[in-house]
Amino acid sequence: MQNVNVPLISFLEYLQIEKNYSKYTIVFYQKDIEDFFDFMKEEAISSINEVTHTEARMYLTRLHQKKYARKSVARKTSSLRSFYKFLLREEKVEQNPFTSVSLPKQEKRLPQFLYSEELDKLFAVSDLETPLGQRNQAILELLYATGIRISECCHIQIHDIDFQVGTILVTGKGNKQRYIPFGSFAQDAMKTYLEDGRKTLLDKQKTPNSTKHLFLNFRGGALTPRGVRLILNDMVQQACSTLHISPHMLRHTFATHMLNEGADLRVVQELLGHASLSSTQIYTHVTKEHLQKTYNQFHPRA
Image 1 (spheres, one colour):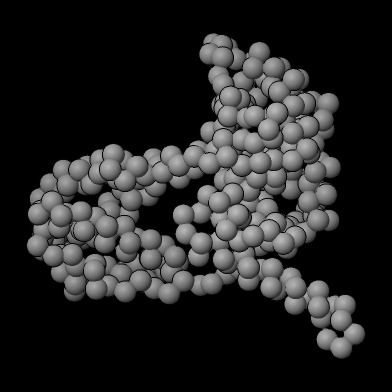
Image 2 (cartoon, rainbow, N blue to C red; image 1 turned 90 degrees about the horizontal axis):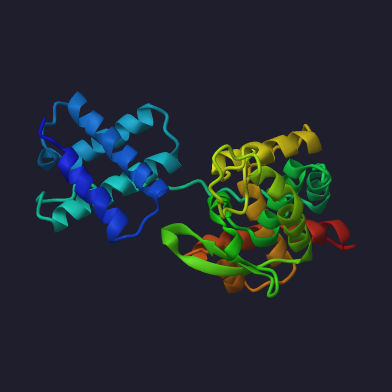
């Protein structure tokens, strides 16, 4: 089999430099393409030029046989389509075998969100007398107040916050930045954490590096997305053993509650950092469902 690492490296550099994709997105592309290279080895396909529409269909069949979810199959197909499109542009191949391969239809699942009663239980969990409790409360308040992603939350630095105006500068996918307002609850929680708990956590660093990241772990280093997920999971367990949520549900809850209260769809799109309005429109289905339930519950002739 020919050395496929060279075109792959070139493609990953293209994603990083020209497309400005995040490192996490690039890792997924790399994994998807390397999985296809493993398939090529198994099928004794010696060159990327030998892959035709037939081999592409064979690969999709293999994924279905391995019980991959439709979403995963669609992502892998999209990754390979982009890879071959790049190779075609660079004149490394003569055709894109994934162009005519149809993506599997996605299951349209409505995003789950939390109700006010469930949120109240979460907000009551943290011990605000401890540094970690203050940090956890600040994380929870900020995620619900802004709808930002976990990764965006971890990248926030102190100088990104403007308490006077009540906004925070967030760096999202593709390093695109946007300003998001936050309310008094999030402001109070962050100020308490900054003035007390964060200083205590910062003192625990073995080799002080005066990190500017807002959220720190118990050793005083920058908190990771995995760390935030563990924190939220622990808070959920303390709040209610029967409450099953993912960190992303706070983002869904933010969007749903905003729309339920009459916020404009395009405003919510801007706050969430969605490139396309269609990504935000799924929340309108949630609000319609909410309206229907409310109507059925309270209208005398429903």
